[in-house]
Length: 476
Image 1 (tube, rainbow, N blue to C red):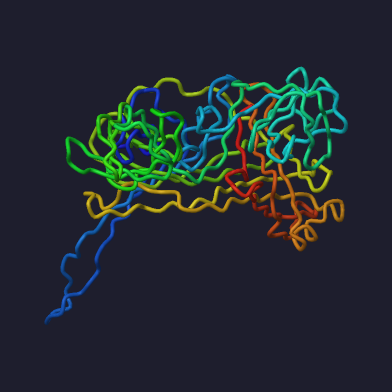
Image 2: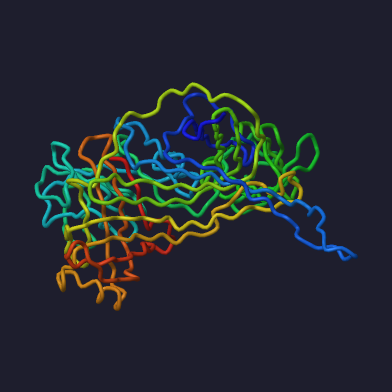
């Protein structure tokens, strides 16, 4: 008889959307309260006749959903990516260490700073060179809210242009300045930020003519002369390294791309989904494997004083093959304990002020809209799921500080607010959530054991017109 407690979850990024994955012991995910559910469409209709008895209804497509919780914690080793990284990528986030299709995460040592750079603010060198401070540390590696000495250093996500050493750098909120900064790329930290793209990377052979196609061109995809799909070129890293968007069908190693003028190139590598990849999940309930394919997700994280911030994940996709099978022996599950909301930094800023207001709870919701991609050609009626929209929000319960930070006025005047949350103090297990530009959309007065509180909802907004820069989730 199956035991409810005996559940196992394996998760792995797919190379082909909906194509599944070959799971191994290292693909196990440490989760709490996993659940799986299927939604089966029924065409409910009543045939006319002499009886009120019902006949069988036609069965339509089936959609599968897997939900679970996990902790916001580090891997325990600074250079090793966090265990929740692949889940974020399948939820519409991109990582810093993904080569030329991603962004740089920098360690910046201050020189002779005037003022104090603050956690969560933007820094600019020129109008074309900009970043966001996602971490502030002392020379001994202790996390800080703001710089206080010329031996401190910053961890900065580069959001526009290229930040350089010895260039005049200004804090967008604090007004701090420094021309003696030392900028260095670092791999000891990891950051994730949203993306609106869904790219697949391939290596291709030389095009049949001397002129390479331009970004934006559409190609047919053929396998041994048979038309099997269509793609659009969206980024060219080099003449043989390109990112594509699959418009329909499929692509694979050895398939031939053909543009409208007849120019051709052959795919020379296994395609790799590099932005918003799909995720294959295998759920085992004490002897029964159930597969979720082509899934993408939405998530939230929440925590109160004394608790870690805990993710709640929901992944939606197509139904794979189900079978009786034993759970596999796992390896590599993290033994690191999640940092808690104790000795944390919960900071809120407006103008040049950054305040550690007494914070009782924090909730972040990614606000993703995940839609099944319907397809009558598929045996399951769909080819995976897509993230089609997002509207993130941060909800906090704070002590009522009256006019110290007038949340109602900030709401009524649509004043920019920034928010930053840092948990932990040990390298490799320090995590942060940073939203540099927020709009206050809701404020309500509450009570906590006789203390007046405020429940405040912040909506992260884009920094630049290009967007995809409203929130950052990091392991530091």
